[in-house]
Image 1 (cartoon, rainbow, N blue to C red):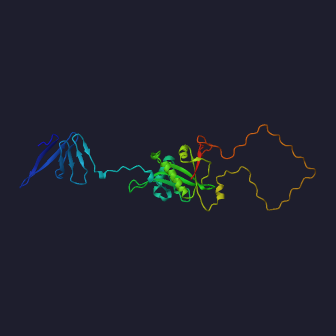
Image 2: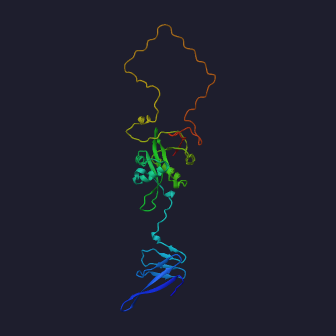
Amino acid sequence: MDLFPLLSTRVRYRGWSPGHLCHQPELTLRSNLATLTLDPAHQPELTLSPRLAELTPGSACHPEMTLSPGSTELTLDPAHQPEDIPAPNLAELTLEPVHCRPELLDACADLINEQWPRSRASRLHSLGQSSDAFPLCLMLLSPRPTPDAAPIVVGHARLSRVLDRPQSLLVETVVVARALRGRGFGRRLMEGLEVFAQARGFRRLHLTTHDQLQFYAHLGYQLGEPVQGLVFTSRQLPATLLRAFPRAPSLRPSCKGPSLTPQTAPRAPKGPSLPPPPPLPEPLTTSPPPPAGPPPQSLLETQYQDLRGCPIFWMEKDI
């Protein structure tokens, strides 16, 4: 008996028992692209329509399957399908020190090395030096996409104390994930640094940049002079000792200290004193005195260079 051209039912008698005739129908669905043979032992529930045959197994563990004459489509249970991870929300980002989240050290090291490749062991060692006594590494974190997942490290920055400027901090190693640049995460990171520094009594931030002058200028930073960041701080070391490190050694010969042995004054030479020498003639042309202070710089040109000899711009902002 034909229900429609694509469906045929064949009844095959496989045997009989003394009381009745046992028959087990074998149902075959044929389409242009697929042939499905059902096992009668499972007895699925079958629903037929003129143009579509839908098969819904009785077990709740199986996915819902839909067969159509033109093609074979498989639809899984929506409860088992993975959910899309939403993009980070700027309002939900948090700023936390690295040493307070040691489980995120590896992710933070990967983020920094993506911008500045370096030995992983060396990077982890540098991040491990973060402490509340400075230098201090801060991470910009996105909320957990799922309850069981860890927060996503979106950005990083490092803060260090400045020599002879107790109310200043030096901002270094500012980086945002490549996939999230140009979407406001860098501004959110810098604004968080200002709030973090203000809460701890600091009033000025210093930084250096090679090619991000316009970005920092929009945030209120202005061109400034170089400062010396402290790699480590300790209360056991006096400030006078720390000041000696960044200074270059003097080329003048060392002077001997005063002697405790009393010395006699030199005796005046005998005879009449010599007349003073004549004054030197004045030069014909006089050059203007050199300007005092640091060399001038602008947003297009600077006189400062980094350790590799590349031009570098010093900027600062009062917070």
